[in-house]
Image 1 (cartoon, rainbow, N blue to C red):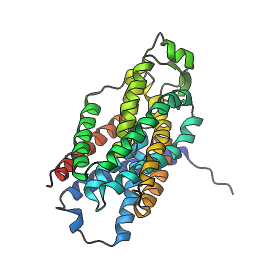
Image 2: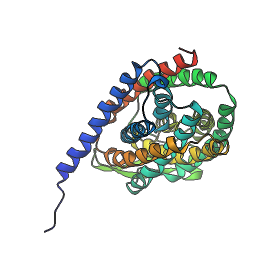
Image 3: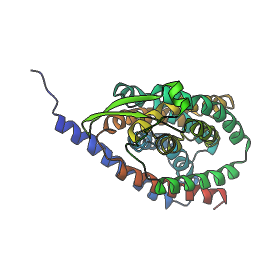
Image 4: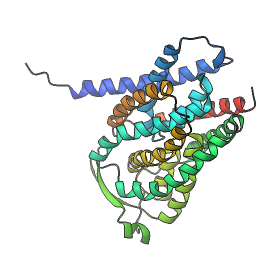
Amino acid sequence: MAIVANPGTSRFILSSLLTGALLFIPSLVFAAASVPSADSVQLAWWIWMALLFIFTFLLGIIAVIAGVGGGVLFVPIVSSFFPFHLDFVRGAGLLVALSGALSAGAPLLRKGLANLKLALSMALIGSVSSIAGAMVGLAMPEKTVQLLLGLTIIFISFVMYRSKNSAYPDIRTPDALSSALRINGIYYDEQMKKEINWQIHRTPAGLLLFILIGFMAGMFGLGAGFANVPVFNLVLGAPLRVSVATSVFVLSINDTAAAWVYLHKGAVLPLIAVPSIAGMMLGTKIGAKLLTKIHTNLVRRIVIALLAVAGLRALLKGFGI
């Protein structure tokens, strides 16, 4: 006898997984914050690997929905609360963001949310600057990188708190460059129950901003989805869901370029990278399914709080506290 899945049951299971992720990650961060030093915690190596897998699995669910990428949360939290060297964490962070982007990319492309023309035009210039950023980051002392990382993460959390995303920007006239590149699209919005036509403007300004975004992604090992989405949405004028989905493809290109630098320098440790990638890929598949069903405001607030705590912790570590 064939068993037919109940859509209501599937939605309940997915929502329960998201709720679990939202509850687990804050509790993990604040519990770890009470520990004086991760090096003083004597745990078997496989326990740290298991915790890393669970953390990245739940992180993958949140990262896709919030549109921030996995690296922006992975690097500051893992470097602060796990007993791993920062260089290995940054190398793994790029691979985590890359694996999450590749895992979530196909479902988002099938739904028509991601736009390849928009992604490739911005990722081309961002990937070059990400290589330069990776080389600079690996050449700097660890404490200096921790200080800069802490300041950057706190600034990111502030920008995300202050920014007001426009779900459906009204762009009446596209600029000449976006028209020449034919960057526009149409997708079906499940909440509004209709097709949404969109186009962009201020494309040259977006290209300049992606030079900076790529450099930061390579330097700190961040996925930089936190910056991709606001630029796509607030500067270029793409709809919020298109911005989140297209950011996934930009991550996959920029992070690949920077990851080669970390691999070449021996800054990728399989014991850290493998469980992190496995957890992220599983989590992002669930996150991609939830993207069109879950309201992102709650997730975004929790992400902002996590970034603020992780940024403060990175600052303290940079000062040797």
